[in-house]
Length: 256
Image (cartoon, helix red, strand yellow):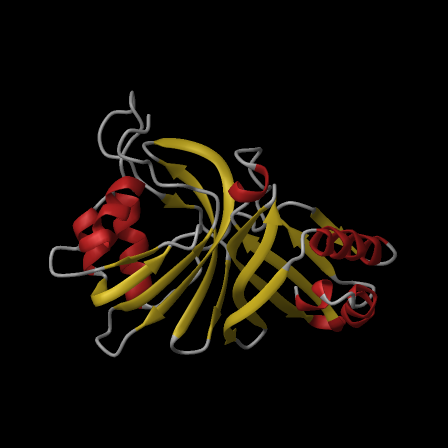
């Protein structure tokens, strides 16, 4: 992201190499030269025309991948917007690198066709206990269990950049989960949020970055949609923070 913003897209393309791939939720996917170089030039030009700036906020290093998080500021329709964004760089054999960018596209292009899935349905990715507890609670539509997977004062930052905190009554963290797990009108029972088996994980022992595919939301099956969740474990053994990068939105209080 930084290289694209500083007109170093040519250098980035050479550094990534012939066998590398970049996948972006707005611009799509490109692999190898010369397509990759042209792809990165287009992104760089688009960002420059919108006076873009990227502020790095976190970094997670795993055995074969790393995740950079930050905030992307853009000028869209004469207004300045800030979008949480993350970049996964997966290193493979033979100097092959795949970069996958994650951010909500709502502010950029509004509702649109879901991004194609990035990971095939395969064996489940093993995750630490508090992460597994939260994912299981979402699949069961259990708001209480989802909130209880966070320690007191724990927070969730959604894909729009809004932070929701757990207090003694659950606070805004509870409200966010209630809206995420509420079924749309016409759907029976409580909605669930389910992810497909398979994905990818970057973990440094404290932070778990989980790439996933949403297959069910608000009480109904949905077109598979990729996302990224950054889970931080606290000293309590529960979650201290969660940051979400996807386009699956909770229902508002008056939404259908």
